[in-house]
Image 1 (cartoon, helix red, strand yellow):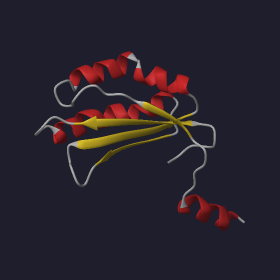
Image 2 (image 1 turned 135 degrees about the vertical axis):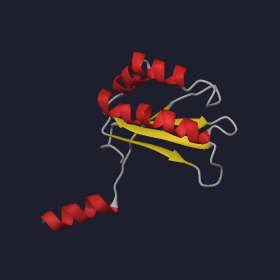
Image 3 (image 1 turned 180 degrees about the vertical axis):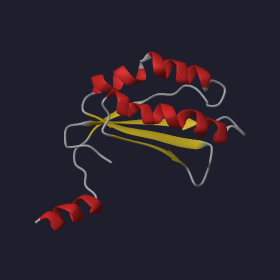
Length: 114
């Protein structure tokens, strides 16, 4: 899921309002997946197994400008407006630079091609 060294990763923590977690999940999944339309190479929306009202959205972008095009787009503004009342505010995205990443799946593919 993580990008190449030097790319960026966004983390957005969402807390749904009480008794609204399922509605929030259904409403926000298309918006989270829309990162791909704005240049992201991967995305995930994960929900806590300990407290089902807590979600974290991740996406990997080639640069911060690509993320900002996504976050400030009319599409996302409309999605946030439609989901209003389902999540707590403020929502503050956090930008990270990927220092390194890997996965067993990548290593298995590389080994198989050798």
